[in-house]
Length: 450
Ligand code: NDP
Ligand code: 2IT
Image (tube, rainbow, N blue to C red; front, side, top):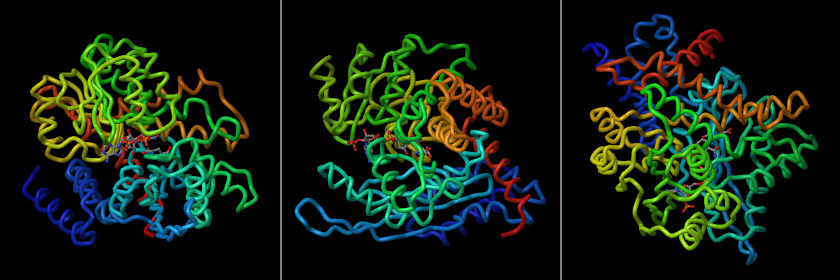
């Protein structure tokens, strides 16, 4: 990067930091994208004059609201809810809802920012948004979860709609929560519409949506391997998390002949040197309850070691798939992966690697796919659910799986096109950021200042 560009980038990063103090995750996400696209950005007079990057660093709007509900003891509980509508330039705002005690406006702003660029990579007409609450569902009863979802929707319903903003699931928001959210939305507006995705198949949901993020991640991984003339069969894979994304990634990987050596939760890691069997993963997907309980069941059925409070990254593996949460891989974890000769890191979670970890992977020539590319299968299938709802139709499983595969292959091709080839190393972050930014920036430009 030229000296001028480096100064311009630093000034831009400082400007974002000053406007968004105390929001480390949001600043991180903007910094990561800006660093990759800045040289291209400065060469484009039109984008610069229209301040496209500066505009995209500010959400279209952020809605903050109180969520008030009664627990099973009749005690009133007060939580906070948000919806960040980041960019509507290429379609209705689209992105998940997260319920977790760590949810802050910074976390949701980073997720909505990433979502805009991820959604652009899918090639579908969907803008970027994200929502959630600091509500902690662990230990809450089914009735409490339902009441919370209804209280959350009591405010959210005013801001969403099939052509406005279409929420879906994320951490701690799965099929059950989407059912409660959708039911309450339908009753409030007295309209049956596709205003949420991830619905049950019986009321407007799509085949393959539940599996899509994890399966899409493995399809993307296969493209990365094919690029190096390698195959998945026989490789050892360390996966973090044991939720929707992690388990479906594990299921597809084992079906394709890989050995999944770890899964994890916030309490620790299940390690199995010989690999967690397919049937155990299939059963885990059907099991309800905490993800730690799911892992303990696998252990009691099939063996393996429970590594309390440990992350998976100390185990030997060829491929690492972080599928839990942001910044779960730090520099020490990245060094451990490099020391164990891990060759590929593909992100199922959103921004699971710290900037130091990302730098370390690049220095060690470990291929590293960013979530906005490798986990885009989930939102892509959500886009296909919207298309089915809008056309009052239902597509079959095979057709949807083929479309998912095609979309992931196309995202991989977009990454490669812009990844560069320094010492034959493919920089997937750069590739994804450039391809996504071009699409969003052109749409923003074409629609004038506003
Ligand atoms: P789930 O709620 O189904 O599972 C989350 C898993 O991650 C659980 O095993 C959970 O463990 C673990 N986890 C969550 N937070 C932490 C934490 N702070 N520290 C350690 N472990 C943690 O969520 P999903 O599988 O849907 O989402 C996982 C990731 O994938 C998220 O980053 C999400 O944004 C991303 N993603 C999800 C998509 C989707 O379609 N669902 C699409 C694209 C990306 P525990 O239960 O113990 O908390
Ligand atoms: O991070 C994500 O892409 C999701 N949680 C899925 C979003 C969606 O709208 O399906």
